Length: 125
Image (cartoon, rainbow, N blue to C red; front, side, top):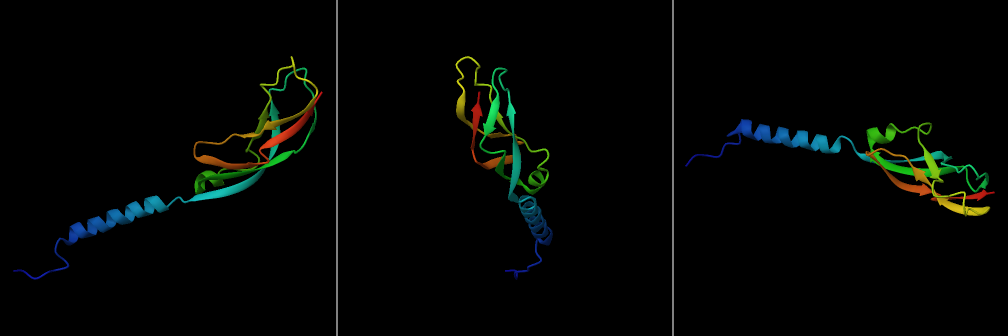
């Protein structure tokens, strides 16, 4: 019977520990973080016969989640929150107040967690 030696198969043990450390570093290298930004609301596809005379809010607060690099790449100047009026047809659109959902353009690496407020009220005539 041979005595136990901790240095037996030392290169294989060293290789296993090295692979474990590399895997651990690759998983923990880019943590997921959240960021809240204030973004002005834009309006898209406004029908010719529609005039927006009032809106309840001018900006929305958007909460984003993603990798550190993706979140830090977002700046308030390039972020875009919008209300799409494509569904409001001039035929049948009465003057009055409407609550419309706010959308946010994001990349595949970012997830929109929350838009506050989620709706903007507009008055049209």
